[in-house]
Each structure stands twice: as C-alpha cells, then as structure tokens.
Image (cartoon, rainbow, N blue to C red; front, side, top):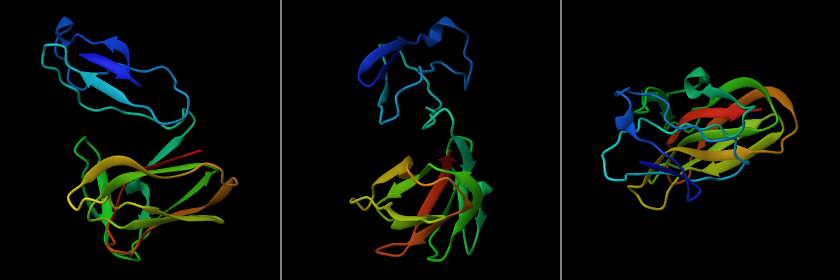
Length: 178
C-alpha cells in the first residue's frame, strides 16, 4: 500500500516482503510542523492490514489517559477498540480532575450526534467546547475536542465537566499537555 501525507506520496509498504507480524510499526513520519495533517493508506492491488495510526501534538507533550483522572459522580468505561479504555459520563456534575503543571492542553475524545458540550477549567483558564455533531447518528472517535495553546504556566487541577445543553454525554480518551 502507498502512504500519503498531506496528499503527497511518502512511502510504499510491501507487507508481503516480510513474514506477517501483527501490530508492527510500518511507517514513521518525520517531525512535522504543528498543525493539521492528513494521512492516507491506499491499496495498490493487494489486501493490507493496519492496526492503528498514532500521533502526538508535539514531541514534548506528556499524555494522561482518562483512566488516570479522579472522577466525581458516575463515569462508565468501555473499550476504545484498539487496546485502551475510554470513559464517559452523562451526569451534569460528573467531573474528571487531575493535578498537572502545564501551559498547553489538548483534550481528545469523541464527538457524536447524541453528545453535548464540555467545560475545561485549569487555574484561571476556563472554556467550553462542543462535542455534538449535527447528524444524530454521526460519530468521530479519538478527535481533538479542545486545545488551549496560550495559557499561563499553571500548577493546578485540570477539571473537565460535561455541560448540559441538548444532551449531557461527554466521552474522553486522553489529554496531552506541556
């Protein structure tokens, strides 16, 4: 299969040239400029298998999984389908909190037609973010829900809470921070 990065062919992978090895690294990009990028795997005549694409918003970022947060009220968990856990709440006061030191945040989770909004609080920083898609059956997993790039360096609890508007559901995977 061919690997395209931002619509440019960057590599051709021949999975038949080596013995089958599940979950193996097949391609690693060079360090990219911060921003949105697109990766495509396009078949070139043979079937191929990909386990997952992985990324970090910056090489300096640390990652905290939602399972590492302390939760209030009811949070439920389910498999994320690729070996990890995702957690969600549909309780208006169901917050997740974790003490961190940071000046930048990236919150990843799920947007869906039946979700609502979220609220992030970190020191003096506070903002809401939409996790609802316009189509009632639409679903986007592992998507960037909110980024805060220019907050003062803070040592405090990061608190993420659902906001009741049309719906209350908030599903989270992890947070990157520096």
